[in-house]
Image 1 (tube, rainbow, N blue to C red):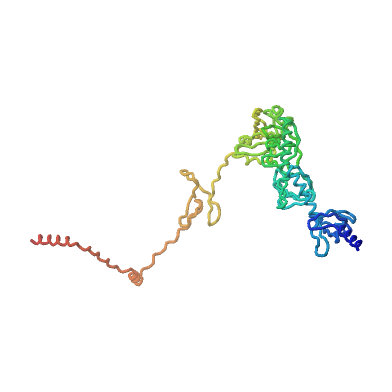
Image 2 (tube, one colour):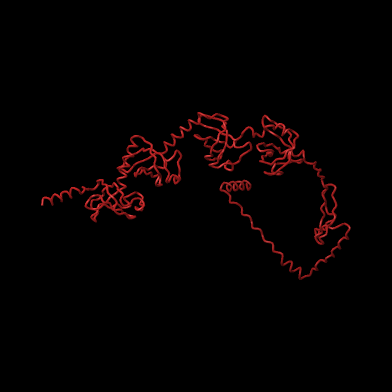
Length: 459
């Protein structure tokens, strides 16, 4: 009996004590795509599902095999089916949190892969633990598209660590800024004005292009892109283009770049090439009210004044020329100091024949009745053409050479009879008496004065 008790006691002692939250090590005795069974030395086996293996569900047969030993965390001693529910990812997360906490306290730089692109940032896996890096802390410039970082390893530091609130924040921006400052400092120590340097076009704007020259950005202004006139920088450059420039100016932390190398200066030996009297061919580049600018060589524009376009008077250049047209002209003035050249086109044109004033033709009158032209005479007093004769009855012009029109036959007066006379008398309206004008009423004073005057007269 004592031996049996001793055996039961030994068996009981050999069984591990398992409780929720404890850490155990077990051996895989069976594995399926969605779960694995582990012998953890307990009276019941442990079950590890693929959702508790990692945050990203995977086929367990691809990551573990029968016989593998795993250290896991007990979630429930009895999952309802008499088995122990296990978790691998939660234990890994606890270990990762300890690692992240140490990095946070020591301000250590971590390097980990980006496993997920979230709304507003990146999710980075640090030994099973997750760190969130907001989009505003990914780079020194805000990046709207973060997909390029997926599955890429990046460096960052932990700036906030509150695992209970599930708030672990990483910052990559400060490392990028610090790295660029160090590169910028090293760059300014070795560059100087006039130095030729290679770079990559970073962005193109209306006034020029920003070029990354390795540690700092230099501005290639539109006026320094060519010896000629550049209308739109985007037609010459795009982000990513390789470009070789030289440093024109350094002002504090600002660098001005240029592509106008002196050996390509079109004004070199210009005094010989463009001496007065030389005939050149060029294209009309642009026009103004006072003339047209003609590109006679890339980077060299000459002025063709409106008065030198043609032999005749020209109101505006666009009446005679158009942009892009190729013309021939003669150089009449060259100012090397101010880099100004004047042209004349009219000196190469043949003389224009004067236009003789043509005598104005005297208009002829048209007889409306016959639709034939009738010659006119000129009134010397007014120097205007007038018809020779006018028939007042028809108001038409006739020639004096034509025979006069027959006089109209005399019309006899109508005969007056008694009946017609009586009818005429009846038709005359009777005279009507004009109404008598009423005298205005007299006032009482006028009446008294009139009576007094009458009495004196009678007396």
